[in-house]
Length: 140
Image (cartoon, rainbow, N blue to C red; front, side, top):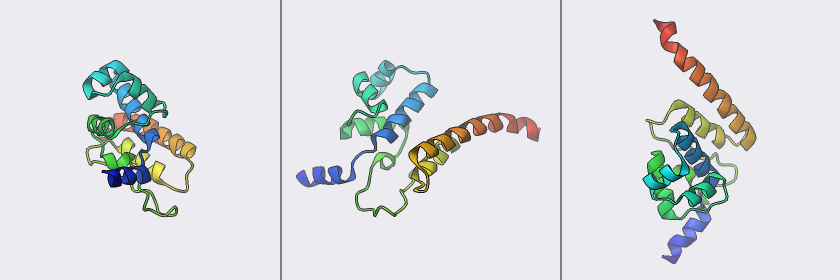
């Protein structure tokens, strides 16, 4: 068991990735922290800390939230065996929306700062929402 804990310390959890995913899904669905807590079994106070980037969720809470997000756990895990120059792996499920996939790729791009990746992701979300709503009318 101690070997497993050592591996977890080396790999770690990207709490900002998890927190932003939880907040985004919760806001998209118009849910309160309390409702998400009831659905996931993760306390509202823990959810709040995770969303704010100050929480360090345990393995059970990570699994519960990844399941609720329908997100692969690998997305929020740091893998300690990669060299600093290796690109970050982008892990997603095929049913994820295009903006979520693009956002994951932007965050993994080592040539972009976190702020730049976030800004580009937001630009893409706005453009995608605008054009995807109009695309059926343009074809018809």
